[in-house]
Each structure stands twice: as C-alpha cells, then as structure tokens.
Image 1 (cartoon, rainbow, N blue to C red):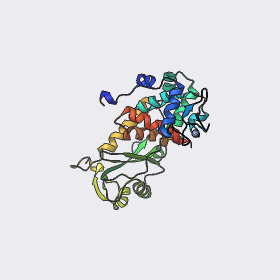
Image 2: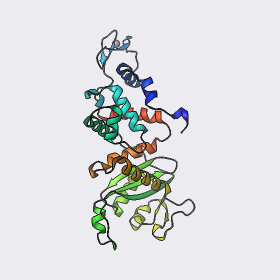
Image 3: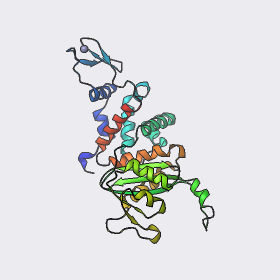
Image 4: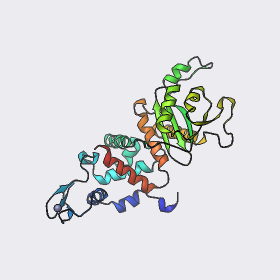
Length: 289
Ligand SMILES: [Zn+2]
C-alpha cells in the first residue's frame, strides 16, 4: 500500500476532531444542506439534529442507526471503526479497550455491533473462481488411526470459501461438508458461466457439474497444474487461522460467521485504508435501520 492510501488515527483525529464535525459529516453524506423551502440546514447546538433555518424542519443524521441510541460519542465510534478497519488480523475487545481507553464492556459491545454490520455482498462471483472448504478450531485430536475423527470434526467449525481471481471473497459457516451444502454454496455465490477450480473431493464433483470444473487432486499431493489451483483461498484460510490464534485465541462457534465476515471485509477492501473506513462507517449508519 502506498503512502497516499494510508489513513491512521492521527489523520482521523485531524479530520474529525469534534462531535459536531462527525455529525456534519454524517449529515452531508445523506442530505443536501439546502432545504426544498429555500432555507439552509444547520446543526442545533447540543443536539444530534439539523434544522432548516426557514421552515424549522428537523433531520437527525443518525436516526435509526446504532449511533443514535449509543451514549458513546461519535468521535470514539469513528476511532473504533478506523481501528477495526485497519486491523488486518482482527482485533480483540481487550485490545480495543486499551486503545480507546473505555471499559471492556463498551469495547466488546462496539466490536459486536461493528461485526454485525459486515454482511458480505450478494452479487455472484464469476470468471475464474476457486473454491475450498476449511476446518477451524477444535483441539480435539482425531487419533492415530482416525478413530476419533467424527468427534474431532464435530467440534470444528466448517467453512466454505470461494474467491474470484483478482476479485471478491465469499465465506460461509456451514453445518457439514456434504454434497448438498457444496451445491447450495456454489449456487448462492458463483455465476453459472464461471470456471471453477477446486480440490477433487467427492462431495464437490456433482456440485461442480454446473460449471466448467477443473480440479487438482490434493490426496495425490497435486496442488498446482498450470492455472488450476486453489492457492488464493488457501492463503486466506491460513491468514484467518494465524490471526485467530494471535488475536482472539479462540472464537465461539456462535459468533464464527461474524468473525469471518470481518476477514472477508478486509480481503474485499484491501486496497485503501480511507476507503475501508468510509465503507464501514456507511454500513454502520445503515445497519440498524
Ligand atoms: Zn425548510
């Protein structure tokens, strides 16, 4: 990333030093200053409201969003959003607590609300698409001869992922890695005229028939055959695994989709800090409406 794309806490504090400036930013992102009656909207002092100078009509730029009910100042929300959107390996509530100098409870709540706003896009991937399934967590060992394999798998979180080469990532926590799950995941996320690259696992074979399907056989230690590979998905998996280990230690199964959405958000918006911040701010403004 070059310098021009860098946007850190210092830049943020310079751009958004006060509550009023944050509010004005949110207002201008949604409305014009000009009222249809010919008057001009101005911030009412001490309120989260803008009022027309002529007809007195009032608009709140945070209405219906999580910012409205929150006692946490916008300056702090903006900072939390920036910190989250810059933390490529994720951030724990403990770390956010330290950086924002708020209570653990506040930090945890802010993080949960941010993660909730990060649903993945629903436009389908196309072109060359890699697909792969990964197993996360669960220290339970499968045993020397896999005699405890099913127990071990039951404790793991199964995640399906697909990435368009040079494009977006989609990832979903699934209940099992059977054929139907594969078919559903692919139909939901990948356009029919795509080239599909995957491992030669049996549960993918029938799902793959919907596509121009190319496989590498991992069981025979074949990982790359010319353009046929799933390296981009695997790089993403190992990044998530390393990050979870380093940042979060363990993630409860209940929240795993939300954590995953955070990593997908970073991947899909990996080119500019400032853009990622703006995008996430916009999502939060919309999320609770
Ligand atoms: Zn007016």
